[in-house]
Length: 332
Ligand code: ACO
Image 1 (cartoon, rainbow, N blue to C red):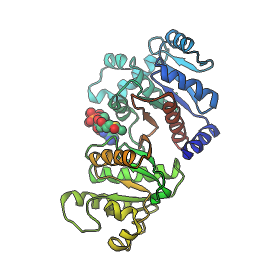
Image 2 (image 1 turned 135 degrees about the vertical axis):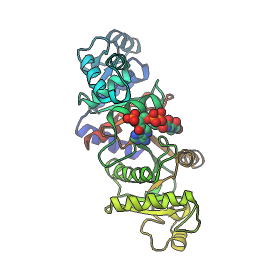
Image 3 (image 1 turned 180 degrees about the horizontal axis):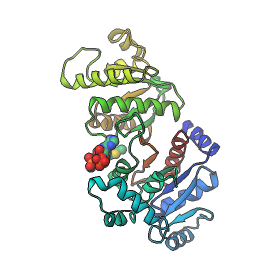
Image 4 (image 1 turned 60 degrees about the horizontal axis):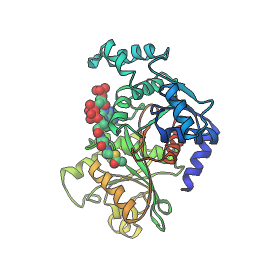
């Protein structure tokens, strides 16, 4: 993908510190060598130094110069435990519990990001989406003005005239099962920011529904209408419109008929789905039927960037997600 090359260049131009809590994992070590050689980020691997060095030797990868931190022996562990206790005591976390929690490498990595010992985190080659998101949601929290962490996919559809010549952002396809109108508005705003910051395109955001501008009435449509109003009110600098059916959002002829006064309809390049069922099914339909490339899910809305990997990821996928996270960190 052409965009990935641009993201690599952006990452190299202002190197950020990215922590990898799955430092003992083999694909992570192969990726670490490439990230180091390409100069995409300053990495911190979490795990046992002995295990990591032994595995790197077996794999014949050179990770010399990359920092390794072991929660079992690090001087920082008790500082992180105390900070975690302060952040979560109102939720019943005791100091004993916090001391145990920070020995978990994902919690340790999350605390590094929280306390500015790292600029971002990438995990998920072994852990589930929930294992990564929960510490992030509990500790990193959302960016100012954003009330929901969400995710998006960069979709590149071959031989396609829609969006930016087949390039679009889809959200939310991985995090919020049933967003409220306020959360849906946040998803729209975050994805517009991601379109500007990461994809370098001017967003035209379509709030998708099974109705176009009042063609159907239902409480599900009302939610999308309300979300559109909230997002428009909060961010007059972003082109957002809805509610729109998918064809009205992307096909100029349909837009001219169904939503003639909309500046977004017919040329949307950011598609906001009304819930996770629609979003997750929607991106997979396009990926499979149209043979589109789908990069993601990329998390957005966190106060500092953390990103998930698929457990079936390749070292190349890890390199890409680290580069994306590093670029997200540049604007924090
Ligand atoms: N934004 C901000 N904060 C949130 C969000 C959100 N979207 N969701 C939950 N939180 C907060 C809660 O307020 C809570 O904060 P608190 O503890 O300080 O009060 C904390 O996060 C934990 O909330 P829970 O409700 O206990 O978290 P939950 O167990 O529901 O987990 C999760 C949240 C992991 C995001 C869940 O919603 C989830 O599993 N989502 C779907 C993930 C998924 O399976 N995706 C599909 C697969 S991915 C793919 O196919 C590409």
